Length: 278
View 1 (tube, rainbow, N blue to C red):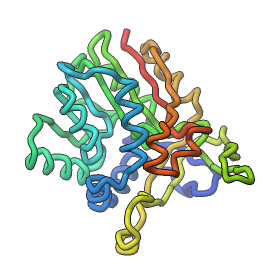
View 2 (cartoon, rainbow, N blue to C red):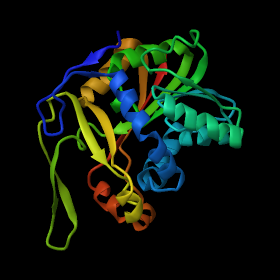
View 3 (cartoon, rainbow, N blue to C red):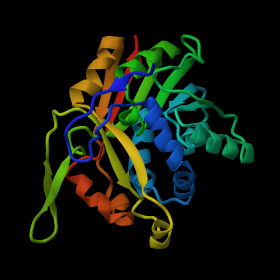
């Protein structure tokens, strides 16, 4: 039986207990439109902010055997491979893996893709990978401590684990953004940070054309809110040595390309974490 997560009584929270099977079902439903929109370049937060910051944070990948945990349709998996890594991507959604494999068939990069939950990587032997990367996926994992244990197991001694997530301090239960009389962002007002659990979000990529939005349903995403401590402590408890943490600020150039990013020069949208297996 997959691990099950508790729910919290917040707006958007769920009235039932959910697990990775529910996460897989959501992403299976999202897969067709998500894949089309990502490959059309509508995920501007990823293009202009999250990916540039994360790739700088991670450093060189050439010659590394890399696991991409929570790879989705494989955009970042392909970028890792293009940086010289030998990559295997795993995702809990069969439809996402199908889309990733189809792109690998069209434009081969030597990437392998497997359907697997991050908290059950039994497809792989101990110490299989030099590096594990996970981009904007671990907040969608019902059993985060279990995922950390499995990632630790499949890394070689001294192996690197780096991930980013929506910043747990500044992106959960946003009540409102505060601006001054000139429209400059002052900060954000937040709700119940300590009420952990699962909730549901629905949204589109803001950069998607209006006719695309009119013809599609918004993405439904299951998200598991955890405090900063709940993200970091399982790493230490499992045997990772924390090496670095980053709270990226988008560059002025990125904000010019997507003005929605200006407010994240005041409040970070993502948290990057890097640890090494002892």
